[in-house]
Length: 360
Image 1 (cartoon, rainbow, N blue to C red):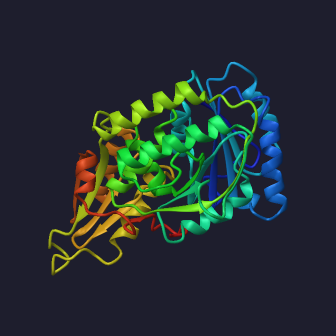
Image 2 (cartoon, rainbow, N blue to C red):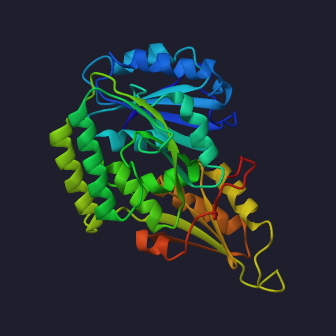
């Protein structure tokens, strides 16, 4: 299990935060400082409100002083954490660990070197006003790319062409390490994703499309930073192989535990669900699960809570408690695979956290 380093002002459970920024880091001790200076510049320019933002650095089993460096660099931030994974598991696994720890309204991830200028963070959040996922795109007309490495740039474009052709995503830049989600969406998608290395971005976006979630692309300013751990040739072939396995359905994600609450007719007179049912269910789960952001899907017969990234023992405990507290409503528990989730219909606009948190 990862260990978690608490921090001064770590108030994610008591302060309503707007944004959690997840920074995956593997042997980044030498580059974290420069990345944080770019982040601080964005803060000074007003692009980031530190009182409403939590920064979570996930040390992906580094063999250098990444975790200690992160602890030192983040010490002055009001909301921050450092999560240490016991071994190197891959960028996707590191981001997943950060998403599991997020408690804010929105969750974003960006690379440790901050090669994408953090000044674009407001564009990501603006994109989430009307979409479930917002991703940086270096191929948009308003984007700026600074690099002297033509081979790396060419391989990146070729990889995106292969991804676009192989998945039908229709996106210009799947690999840009600058993405944001409404937190309920992030938790659901990262629960489903099984790719732990660099191609996890593609699987995330493919899962989002399968579930009928909406994706928008925003322009960014990207500047090459020396010292990347990505190997253009070896990692590109590995990513293509992962994309192929994902496309062929060879990477089945784990099912998502759900709790459905339906009106049975008893006590309601009409069989229709009470108008405040989503609020009641979400408020109960908020207390039972210690503030875990649990999305709730509405339909005409009731609500279904998607307990992604929730421990099975906690799911069972929550189910038993809801049966007692919400009687005579019908409360059922089941596990839904990706196909079962897709059968619920397009989830765009239907994943809510109706507990007083900001809604998209």
